[in-house]
Image (cartoon, rainbow, N blue to C red; front, side):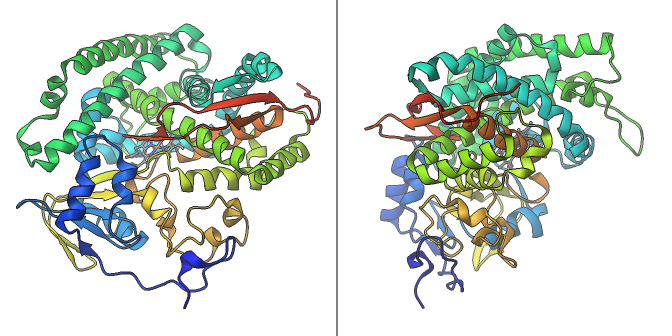
Length: 492
Ligand code: HEM
């Protein structure tokens, strides 16, 4: 049987190859791997893991091993079938110091369950439809702002441009029209400072983990070690408190029964069993989490999409054609998100190759057995969508950009396929609560941008990756922006 990685591009592997035996990394491999940790170049570290599928694991010193998950069945065991045995990893503790106890960083299972029950319904279809209107408004304003650059064919950093766009969109969805441009900018700067402080300390936490001293330092203590980041982060946190509490208090003083923004929905949410509501601090923590989890991730998904399309002009032409046929020159509406299958497929394929969250961690609360490897209590488990999405057992031509796999009948839609072979939003009970929001935003933003402008990577640009919480280009994404002169005239 030919190996799936040799299957012609676009063809579906008919049979899965047997899972290669998992194995412990040899000392030389561990040394190569560890070399990349202090530089936080996780993708380079991933690249030197032995083999290309199955479980890879490092055992260092006398401590428990670190297991790297790249098979969907192993991911299912950690995230679904034996989820009670796995708690969120150390990196989330650092984030919790900075963001608070929102859903993402909530370690108390009972409290988390109660919060999830309150928050999940806010992302139901009936709430997403009005949020689509604010997303579309945000993109329209952003496109007006970039029009002079597009008319002149200037070079811009598409990553910062997408960050500005998604920040504006998430702020509009959260706070409605209550937030002005300068405040949005302050929010963006403060969140950036907080996430950078967390990222700088992940690196340190990784080294501490490897040295097996992590359990001996508190995470707030770890942050304080990097005093510059700590001081800046505390200032940014105070600034965010001022803004977010200000918006909460204003909303409480001036209730609006018809308001559809997420902040109003959070304030109005009631537990269906006992009618209880969130206190002011919890609302603040959930808002901070939405800002932290819901802005950079989507911006990076869009940035990698524009890179992939610039490198695949045929896929881009097909996307522009679809957008022109479905929208003509009009503004999209909520329902259009489902009428753009190729645009959706391109977005999925970009998130397959460049998952905005390339890896996340769990710690084993008790011992377990994954595919013959004993996972001891306290072992770290790294679930890596980046590796799962490039596993040649599940993807033909795994390194190639081929949106066809997400079209009806494509390999990603094949019945019987393990669901977690594609998991940009995670899996199990802690799956991304904002998935519907992010997908809606992604496809509407992609369609509106493709309707009016086109991005081309500046020739000779070496795109390098930066990985900490999210996967983003290290030195920005310099691209030429041009107005689409072949597009139908815009009708507002
Ligand atoms: C392309 C965009 C996005 C990606 C790739 C993404 C990815 C993820 C992933 C992988 C997780 C699971 C982490 C884990 O299990 O440890 C997660 C959780 C979460 N995400 Fe997203 N996310 C995106 C957008 C958003 C948006 C727009 C929001 C909110 C507006 C959001 C809010 C959250 C929250 C609150 C959690 C924690 C859920 C829980 O534990 O109950 N995310 N996200």
